[in-house]
Length: 124
Image (cartoon, rainbow, N blue to C red; front, side, top):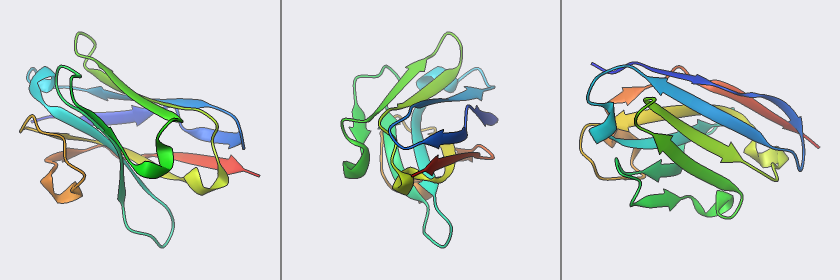
């Protein structure tokens, strides 16, 4: 069993930055693929970024490419999402997710564990 706890969300002006963290429990965390998703009000939860267990495979959704960076520290059981040049359309609840298969996918149904989410609000 893996438990995921996100932190680092908040209110920021457009153009600003935030760094989200997701701390995980569980001894096998380091072998899991990890992803960040987000869900805006009235919209489907969507893929933002994903990283394989060694960090060799990294994927980003098109809207965040060049602005967001996903990374992980397996020694600390933590995955990060550095978000720069934030835009109002980035406003959403951000979730981290883990899947026991070490293959990054944009399909949210393929992830086995989810955090409770952290709110990110970007003002214009």
